[in-house]
Length: 84
Length: 142
Image 1 (cartoon, rainbow over the protein chains, first blue to last red):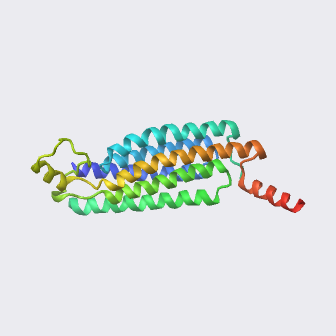
Image 2 (cartoon, rainbow over the protein chains, first blue to last red):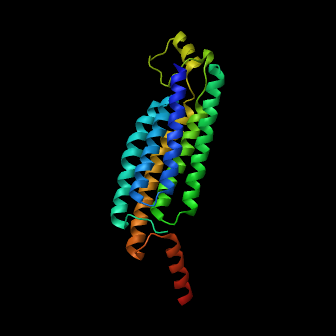
Image 3 (cartoon, rainbow over the protein chains, first blue to last red):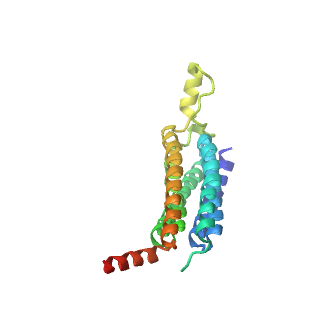
């Protein structure tokens, strides 16, 4: 079923593009972290569909768990909104 | 559209999307004032580059069936299994490199977050423009 895999890969790539754009444009840093986690989930799907399941297993806890944890701790200490 | 054309189209679209993601993240890294936003953009940038390496390691196998992950499941492999594996497996080298790079990126991000918290404690802001202005002002006073 290469066709289904390719369609899912296309959808994951487009979701990651939207997630990246929203994460960079968003002024609220907490929302930006959530959009960044969305983009990371789409990347994990792309890794799995491009036949790298070991990378996906490492990438999901790091990019959806630990990056947002570190950044949320920093946002709690340093203030939530970005001044423009 | 047959399967070969569609597969090549999808791979090209994914490559273009990854380059666009890297470009947007680079814009965020250079043009956004907040240091935490810069750290978020840096993680997105490095992940895009890692995904590009994985995409280069992918290949379309003969007959357009699913390729298999580069993991040998029968040890020691028989000759027929080794031939089948050679014909269907994707490239394992970029995957090994990316696995290392993800872990290193985690350590670098933890270090940068610690630096950002320390900068906030010392100067009370995370805005790069304010920090540069304060630095220039202190340089004039000396």
